[in-house]
Image (cartoon, rainbow, N blue to C red; front, side, top):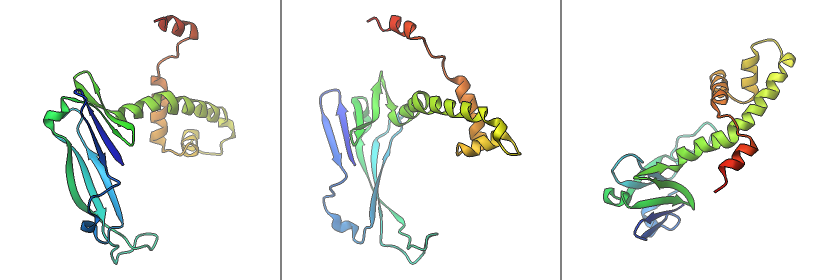
Length: 184
C-alpha cells in the first residue's frame, strides 16, 4: 500500500508500506496489515496503523488450518492536527481516501459508496427487481418477497430497504433538459 498526502503549499508525503526498513523486528511474521485511522470531522491526527501476524498457534480454525493471531505493531502519524487544515487530499494506491471540500475533509470511501449506490447498484437492482416481480406467478408457495430477496442474495429486511431506496431515487431528467443545463 502506498499512501500519499498532498498539501496546499505544494508539500507532498509518500508512505510506502511495501518496504519496511528492518524486517527483523517481525521474526516469524506471516502477514502484515495496515489500517488508516481518521475522523474526517475531527481535529486529531491521521494515523497509519501497523498490525502483524506471528507464527501460527496450536489452535486450528474451521478449515483445520493453524491460526495466526494479529499482534499490534505501531501507529504512525501521517498528518497531525496542524497538518489537517492544509491537507488537500490523501490517496491509497492512487485512489482518493480523503479530499478537501470547502473547509473540511470528506471521507471518499463513504462518498463513493453512496455515489456508486445511486449510479450503479440501484439502477441495476431496479431492473432485477422489475424482472423478478414480473415473474411472481412462477414462484413456488411462500412469500414472493422473501423468495425474491433470497434470489437476490439478501435478507427480507435488505429487500425492503432496497425497495425503499429505489423509491427514494431522484427522477431521471430528459436528455433535452440536461442539454439546457450543460450549456456552459
